[in-house]
Length: 299
Image 1 (cartoon, rainbow, N blue to C red):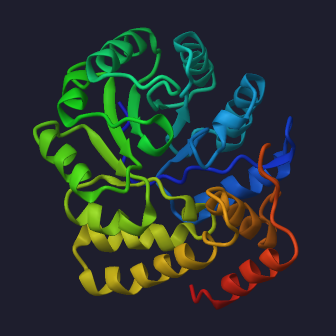
Image 2: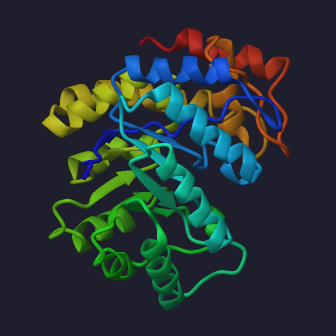
């Protein structure tokens, strides 16, 4: 079974329109992050705007990514959906195109209780043809996996890891402690601002949006943290925070991170800067600001 660790970029989904992939941009993006030394790819997550894409578009993203990747790195596919049946269908497509694992956030809209969550994942894992990562994204799903629920679900060996995007360091450490006896269970952190800290304290790596832009930066940050090189961690962390405080903070709304990241990728000529509906791409002054921020990043 594939071991998951290191920096796994949550790929943006390059779009030419709301129902058309930017295939050339997707290929450039994948080659860019591979050249940067990343340890795997994760598609159809939050940064990939999966919940704004049609089912058919998500299937096409799986197919095109796999065809470009050609098994050069482990591939993780997001299957989060309010429908168990559609999650399973996506998992089956992921298997068909040789993905290595699937990733699932809890069904959203109605908030689930912990026993209901354990029951849902028991059934999803039973029917999934691939190993599964649990994905904690409480800002969008209105709930956290309790550490004991994670441990309960992970009694099934097909549950191979956990991705936490809560940005709550205390919670993450409680999960790491709860799973301390599961040596083959990978624990990833989403927010890149805390990846180095999390790796120093036992996490397996980061699923960091900025690795779409600067993959080598995040790989070097992971390596420094993994090796305990605190001086190098400190140097690279300042650059990560520079990215976070400039590129991700333009605009007035919660979409600023996504729009800023896609805008920066467009400026660098990697892929289209178009976000999925309901969002609109940055234009005018915002593009100027992000270009200036990119010019000032010394890496």
